[in-house]
Amino acid sequence: MKKVDPAELLSPLRELGMTDEEIAYALKRASGIIFGFGMELRARVVLESMNFQEVKSVDLPTHDIEAVKDGVTYFVEVKATRKSPTREYSAYKIAEMAMLDGPHMTLVMLPEPKLYLTEEVLSEPKRSLLHLLRQIRRGDLNAIKEAVGIAEGSIKTYEQLVLEFARRNGGEEVATYLTYLLHEDRRNLEAL
Image 1 (spheres, rainbow, N blue to C red):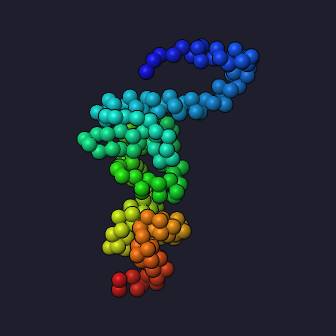
Image 2: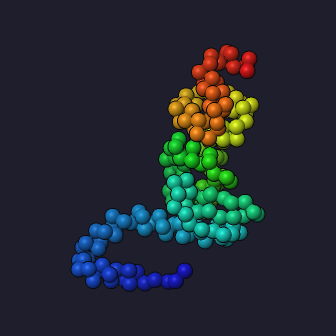
Image 3: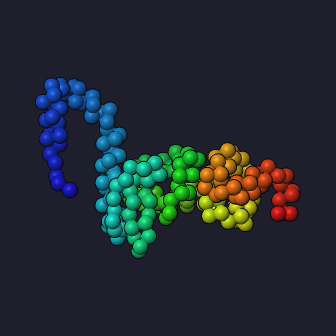
């Protein structure tokens, strides 16, 4: 990447008649975005140092970078926070992650870069949700039954999303079976 003098970036703003105060205000307001893109570039360098290849930035809801290692495409979300890196992942983001054809990773940049398999750092309810959605996508009825049994308490919170995901991605048989599992008395589950 070509080195750019930051002063060169500001000269078009000055040419448009912006004052130093206006430029400072704009930079302050955009500092989070600037920081995010800076961390993304740093993350690409980190992944390349970990022997990932074909490292490229993408602008998708589920991840910032796609990279290949040992023939497998990884989907990497970059986080520059000291808080729980997956705390802000919504159920809808988890559903989008379940649609990826490869491992989803979380690269935490602070205090030092560390790469995690995302499902290992998700809270238990979100991990169970991700597992169930992946089973729905695969259409494996036995695995769906097992996943519902494991995540029984937390799935109720996400029931509407789970059923919609099943209708869209699992087919009619899976959606019907899942509806039965979620609404049937738990004592009758063993009969299935």
